[in-house]
Image 1 (tube, each protein chain N blue to C red):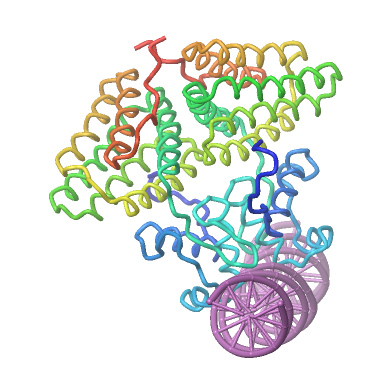
Image 2: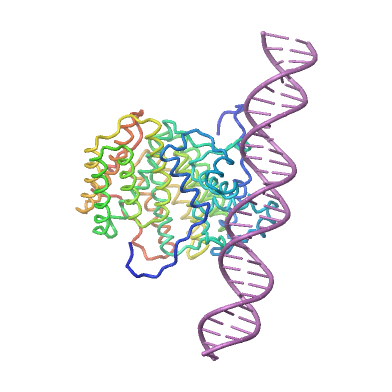
Length: 229
Length: 229
DNA sequence: GCTCGTATGATTGTCAACAATCAGCGCGGC
DNA sequence: GCCGCGCTGATTGTTGACAATCATACGAGC
């Protein structure tokens, strides 16, 4: 990221933060299934900590909306209904659309460079035809896209939403995109950035999200078109 | 909200959630100043609980980004730099713009009804010329706007961003809008919704945010115009 | 046979004590 | 006089134990 040899404060992270990220990962990869209850004693033992730090970590995920809390009853992984899927993709569109706008008025060439690297990951994953690898690369691409906006708030929100996206795929895992299409869909985004075509880029990102929702074969009426006003 | 006599599960909330909301409020109204450290023993005593539940609540705010954690050193209220102000308003624009789009394809008349009620609050506050009341009413309007989108994720994000907005106003409290303009700026938003003018509404919400940033007299180059593509 | 009341085991919520780390201060050495 | 060392008080991090609540199973009563 930044210059070599630079002396900067080490980014230490608290126990709660580490556990929270592990929980996020477990939810994302389905190790903790949707709707499942998280027993505190059991989980704490697995992480090798006591219930205190574990509860702090879980409260983070509750705030994110990845866990649902029922007082005196327990914490559960959320399970996504059709309504939630629409909400997740609409929220992603809001975030990523703004990220695109910010990238276009920022350092476009740097953005293209990083996104091209992410494209390589997508190509490798597509060639392997491994669903998990493909989803990982897809997520990495979009996480990079939002990070390049330079807006840490958008970045944090996108991080949560992308975990939820994985939950969507797990819940209704019908119709993944063909490996070739996956690469193509992302490549045109990078090309629009490289070309400086802001309007085209925004239309593409809207279509990207709309297509993703359609692949999950839901009743549509989800994403509005860019205004022709 | 919903029909009278409806039997629905009571929405109980955990101690951590209650404390978290109180902390949010304290930060919003400046009771906890920007940059200030939150001593655990002191705060726990004030809330009348032990440090356990308090720490859980604070971890929620850390996840939200309202608190900054320095391990083994303490938790601090964030302090917003010019860069953060831009980020907050850009994130708000992303969220509220999508909320507007969703409202326009939803139940417009219901939205107009609720927003008109919020307008009443704005008028009363403007007449009182009380800065805090005006900010409260402003926040209530935007919170209502996003809630009407029916997207709980947008709602949660907006809640955090609006607290940060108040922090902005506190930090650089130069140039509040004139009471009359405050009302007018919001009224035209409601009128655009009532008229079904989606394109106009989106332009207005973009201008609304851009104006807010300008009032904080920052170097602009913040918000991109709606694409003419 | 069904419902209500009760007892039991398990889980969550809370707390106070202990361990680890940090900031501030004084002292000795160069 | 200045730098480095170690000590001390205070705060954070973690833990295990206790209290409160919930889910389940069993049995009495109608």
